[in-house]
Image (cartoon, rainbow, N blue to C red):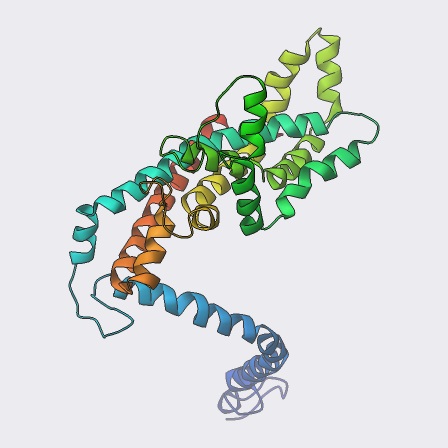
Length: 325
């Protein structure tokens, strides 16, 4: 063809390697290769984390799903049994006992942890000289390992020479056999667990610090007393933090293991009153080597925690108040 004006590219040259779409494709490909060169270093640095995620989380997670449908044991390969492990759980009395113990603990520990945590945070938020020292003192028990904490409380609650019964005897009360009684064993464990609410208190203190002082000043101008300011300003604006600690408290309560295991040397005594869900799961997996059964228990626990967490999230729209909304 003749290029009449000399400045319009010929039709047959539009798709040449140097011009047109082919050139754009080559440029795009080079850009992608260049971008990969930039990203390669980043992927190299995060690769240990990715490998760890796959090896220690993803693979065990999907393996446990498969094992829950088998009779897998550490000592021998398992066979596919379908839902038999889940059916056996429904007929296992000790399974239901562990569920009861765990639910009992969660029902009392989670609300009490929130109540005492908020109350203690409000006390530690007061403008008092030396408050930093008091905050440190109340946080220190959180740093004590659970095993050491269990041993400490075993001495304190000893019915013969324990400090708690010694104090009760001075006022004419005959203290019970705390950890040796089926009635008092779980309340004792709840008391021990409340000893470590310092971590939640720190979060509540951060939430209290975010509440503007202007709200309290305006309430004082309107003649509001302490009770009204607490329940109409402090608590409503602290509900996002309460919501967070509620979710974390539920998850932690259903995974209770170290304290009861240490207190009972893994036996759950007396009368299995301290046999918690995760303890029984551990026994099936690593004492009886019934990995398939333990995997089924793990997924039942996962479903329970997810259902409770979803319920809390759904209902939070009614009672959680965010500033500016």
